[in-house]
Length: 582
Image 1: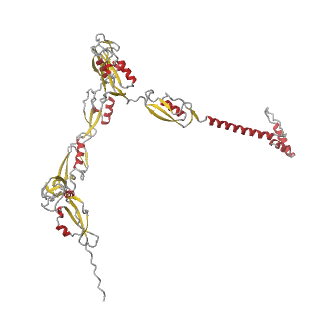
Image 2: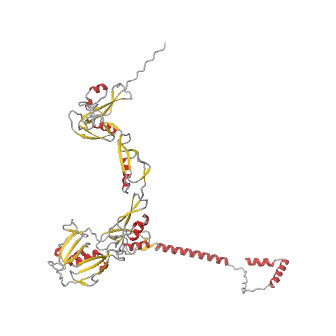
Image 3: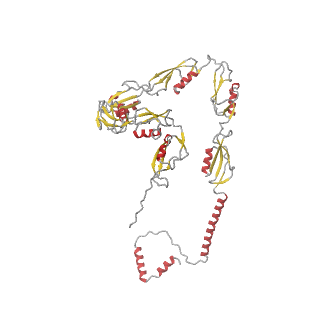
């Protein structure tokens, strides 16, 4: 039973008091004005109709069947053609057009390029998949694109002198020659159309040329009848002055140029011409061109402007200018001078330099501990601005490195122009030249070799200059001359020349194993080696006070004078036998 029947049944079953109350409400409501609608409530059919539920089920199954049918149809469409693209014939297409088509159809391109005399550059030659083929979106298609003519191709250079202009043009076109230029000129000796001369702008060309080899060919225009030639005058206002000269020269005209200032016509442009454009003239006639010198610019008096305003004024007038500052007795920012006098007309290429004062106050820092070059470079920079600072230096022996400032009389204060600053510079510590030359006839134990001398100089702070020279009775590599006598007082960084014999002799390292120090010293080993003895730290049985190790291996070939260290075994400690207790 539906809801309406339930409602009516409930209403009819109301109690008597409820019905009376309803009737009372009805009478009360009838006293009010009502606007009746035209709505007629439909009659309810509460009769049960057999088969209604079955009919509803059939409708549901029909809808389900329709959905399944539609899905099958869509699937077949997708299977038979959906997501597929039909390829076109890209031959003769531009690469840009193919790329656009591929982007619109979601096809990926694999591009291969090759030279071709049949197809222009960037035109498609072929494709990997034939026209009309269906392919999936996202699939690759390879296309071959033309690079144009291969200009590296060489061909025999014909006899151009025996060819006419038409034959040369045909040869150039047939062989894709890209830089063949043909010009013509009058000739009294060469017939019209024949080649007067040609130039190949490539020193490597002998018999063959490349397609891009520059070839300049001049053919004859025949004899020139100068009396009959009339030259049409161009509109020179549309040409650059250099082009005007070329035209006049090529046509045998006399070109006279006069310059004139003009506030509106840019410099170098043609203002007027003495012969109107398109008028006819003959060779040798004169044409006068009036050329603009640009706007006439008068240099103002910049003493009336501050440094900041001067730059703006110069820029507004079109004057190339720069600001320069220098020290002076005038207050900071005061105008000092200008490189071009006021009232002068600015000429092409002129450059104006304006100079302003930065005052007379200069802050001097302390350069103590720095080099003399540091303070002199500082003074040089300021002197370029007319500071006129003088650096006066004196030297003294000092433990500070050579060239270091150890005293400065004016530091950390303000000075004026034309001030002298006194500095004291270290010459370095005092060094006494050692004796580099040993007594003649000694061994390497007393001789000073080049290696020893270099070490000594580094420790002392002097600079050795070695010269190799043979000297009798001196060991290979031994110093036998020094330019400064032993005991001479010099400064750190001083140079000394040391001569030594060539170290070109070799010797074989002996076996010092088991020998004592005395035995080694008694031999003549010091004539071949610089021998050092060292006490060994390890106890080796049987080598007490004997050599048990050497730094150069026995039997090796070494340069005479080589350093060798011999290690001597220590004495064994004697442990006293304890006395038995009684």
